[in-house]
Amino acid sequence: MSVLNLAAIEAALREVQRVFPQINKELFDRRDSLDDEVIENMMQAYALVDQLLTDRVDIFAMGQLNHWLKLNAVVLCGADPQVVQRHHRLLEATATRFYDEPGAGIGDVMDWYALNRGKSVWRRAAGVFNRILSDPQLFIEGNHRSGALIMSYVLAREGYPPFVLTKENARGFFNPSSVIKKAKKRSFIMQYKFQKFTGLFADYLQNQQNPAFLASTRTKTEKKALAARPSD
Image (cartoon, rainbow, N blue to C red; front, top):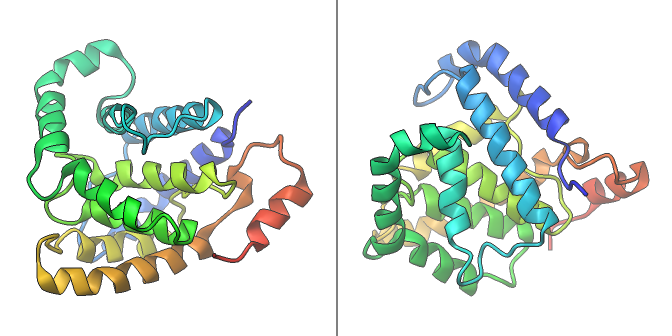
């Protein structure tokens, strides 16, 4: 049984695609266009998130970290095995970076998550995104998109709507991200600022929740209850 409403998610992304040229003019850092391939790959990746949620896979558990790489691969290449094979060098290099990056990589994300398990789901989702995006980034390419998917997994796993880019929230997503991606993980100043970044982004995520992005198997009452739930 699906957890995510993939049709509603795609409709939101298509609307962002339609107005993105205007949004892009207002961003701190200009982004690549949202072409059909980007949207299609994102939808395949959201479908993978939905499957992980349905199967109750814990992607933070040892032995399950490969799912992070799989999500990143789908974001970049889609699910076509031939396309994936054409990009095998990039994906192999990404795996090496993911597992072996000194002071960063997945080890950095897991360490942060372990220390913050008792925090609200919004803060955990925001913190994981910040650890993915800050320098050095977790993946070679596709960190914004992969990070959004991981946030969606964290949120939906606990019954909250996934994070989905919309025409209303795009600026609030990309502009702070431009600051975060330039922050150095190993910088002492960054360690101080990271808590502030995480708190602000957690508030942003909570304000963006939309129960329409959860599967229609949930009742209207359940969706309203989710939208009204405060942060922990």
